[in-house]
Image 1: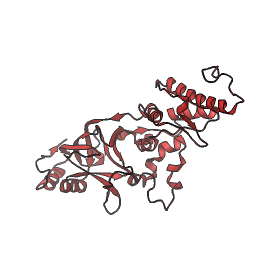
Image 2: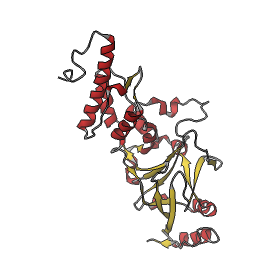
Image 3: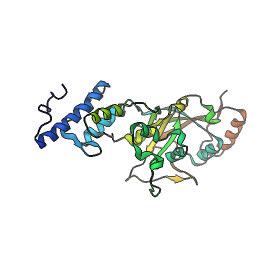
Image 4: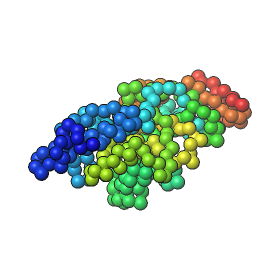
Length: 300
């Protein structure tokens, strides 16, 4: 019996103080049991549990451990690697002239609701606050405005541009994060969803792991699965210098190539093109810039 476990004997106790302690213990058991079934062991002391009206919260140690347990395998982090970034001639001109790669605001992708940016996982988990329709028009920092990304891949996706940058990306001890995009369909039940369903069965409010907002930026509908995207994402938080710029329409975060910085280290190791025409155009763009030593390669 689930109530015949240490800390739950006599549940529910008529003593208010004992009952509240039992509830914290029961919540800890419910969460740990679901995680254990999923192969994720975690220690949750009842004293670390705070049961509020809307959410269950935890002390710092448990909060971080829980976030890692819930999201660590669903959204595995890639520390470094070699990737492709597909682009066009105009974007390459900006890169060559500035020596920078732009991480664009996620708001740019959110302009096309069909892509489900931020909202895909939010809808599955019931996080209504991330819905564009629910945004406060007077909010100067709506959801996604402090997230900056660029799309990478390790596959052949020439439909995304005639130019392919070969990048070596390192996020070890950096604030940017590399993760493979996940493709969740409506109706999918996530590990977090299973935990919250079990909590609800015991009349508890849900949990919301601390990295949920960031993880929502790594989930889109299955229709985009063929893109095999690996996303480099930087979440700008308060207290850190704000270096964002604007291209006249969207904000972006500049990352200087071949230079160590707090977001990520990116080295451009080569440039591929898919046509003779693109080859000549790229050579002209690179001439006289800091990237002139790179000889573009025609890939057929």
